[in-house]
Amino acid sequence: MSPGGQQPDPWGQVSTLVAGPVAWGAIGYGVDALADSHVFLPAGLVLGILASAWLVVARYTAAERLRAEGSDLHGPTESTTGGDRR
Image (cartoon, rainbow, N blue to C red; front, top):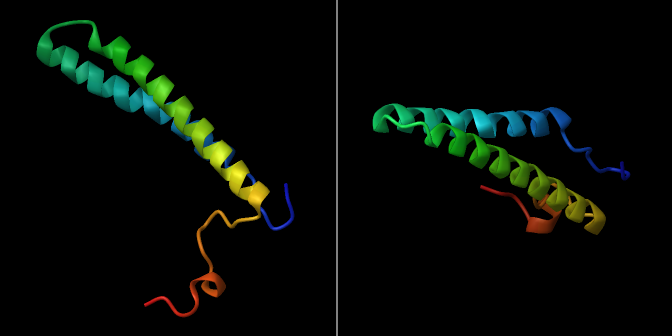
């Protein structure tokens, strides 16, 4: 961990990896029930796995890039905005 930096949230990453297949699988299940087919549940699960993995990797690399640049992960601070935010 860099001084003053934050570590990646492992539980946030795990929950993102689980939530993707659950959400897209549920959507696929619903479409399968409406369309009386068996194609959309597996497609939704695969889409959820791919999308959640991409999101975790994108967030992790963005956080690492910001950390390498010395930026704060929570956006600009009051000293960089030039005053009071109202």
